[in-house]
Amino acid sequence: MSLPNVESTRGSVHTAFSLAHLLEQIDRSGAPVDAAQYQMVVSRLKDALSEALPEAALTAVLRTYPSAAELYENMHYELSGLSRSPLENSVSSEVQAVQLLARFSLDSRASGN
Image 1 (cartoon, rainbow, N blue to C red):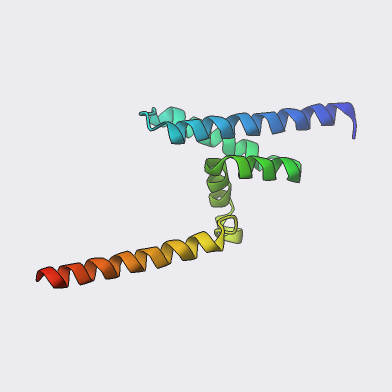
Image 2: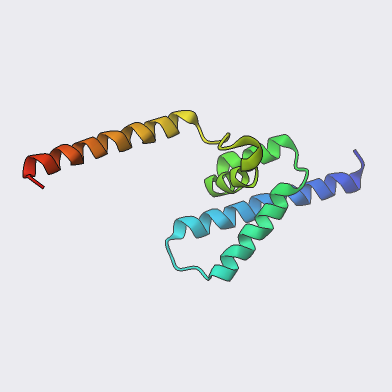
């Protein structure tokens, strides 16, 4: 690989990590965010994730930053569905929802509502 390609790849990886970190901070802050600024960060991160990043770098970004992983998954939903979301989490959430609904149903019957 020639030196310019290495530098270009390094820059692309750095950009993807930086934008993923910024999106994660915004999503976790709970502070109000300007919609246009949020959309700009998401748009730029989508562009960065669309570049030909080395597989190890892409995997590291997606494992480190859940918001970036969710965005990436949504970008590729038509091809792979929710392939990055662990099946156990989805099944566990479904089971918990059914249990909670059943409990509320029993509670409402017991109270006569």
